[in-house]
Image 1 (cartoon, rainbow, N blue to C red):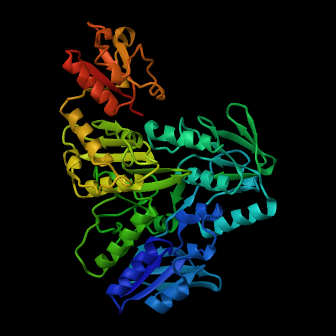
Image 2: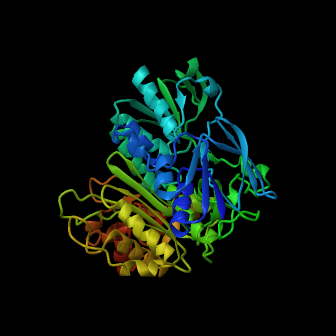
Length: 537
């Protein structure tokens, strides 16, 4: 069996090394048009921040090592320019010329590349960079060392932009983040993103939200913003998204989704026989909803590569689907999510969901260093199926989202979350951990023990005549866009219950969580019906 792999960064090497471990006789050739293979792309911001100082640490494997240890023929600076499915042949352009290779099985692992936003003048900005490959990091590092920039503008405040803001601030640069949406970290929801914004401001990052760059002048030194403001900068980093490297696949007749990703089945095969695809270039299905979804994570690419090797070697296995679990460091905070947020549920056209938002401590509340977690759970109110979760905080955030990812993969529902046994010791957790509390709150909501109402469902009559009760304790930050008409701290609610007007609809305005739930129970116990406002993003 002769197998050709196009692309050698994440999924490609994972596939090739697994195939060699289970099939010693296969001939494996891997083509990579770049100069580096099997590198840690997610580590590049930390290399630029000099957290990772050794460039060679970014390279997990070299062509020489793969040949010596795995007998895999890796050909760098070799671009596959044509696939001929009927002839089972590819055309390769290398530094020494163009040639052809035949195959028995072909794996497309071409990944994705950054896109530049459509801004007048960006193409002629000599100080504008994107970051995807080690060679991109090399260019940025050379620019910083030679030009000694002081101010950097990052266009796009998604996770990639946030990680660069963190690391370039650490490097000593003054960072301005320009984001066209109303908050950073899209598609995270407001309850999570707001904490990230406070952390950025705390570390002197200049945030410009609901803002776009309309023009770039002076070869990248001047940015004109949509509000007329002029921003001077020494360097620009564009982190506004990526698109699949699909050109050679499309030309071969491989079927693409509307957004350009290669469509594969549950065995990672394309519409053409003997041609498979994995990684950032593909559209697969969501394990949660069964809907088509890209799988734009290196972890997914590596797992797909491992699975595909078994499939091509004759195993009757299938890919169960993409869950989507990610994590990022933003200064002293950890930001993590799995599955769907309110934003992505809306994009998928899914409206039958509820959310449970809680702010418990990340470790035992009495242990030094304990701090609050913002944790939001998305679920189906009819079945309890877990649709996603997101969290931000200082300790164990990735652990909680990892637990939720395992629950989703295992088909658990919110009813199972209180039963998950989380290791307890005061420095690490609480006797009822974050994941347990989220399950309790979701169950209470499903059983209408604490009723919620979406902000959009408030009637005009309610907005005019209802009582909007805020039960925040003194010193707590306000939250939500509804102005409270009455403030009674939760700790005083029983003693001051007579201050709550009778004959009015009562809505609890402080952000959904344990405080509002407890307030709703106190009011209910005193014959007063109240609903908790859930401000969906």
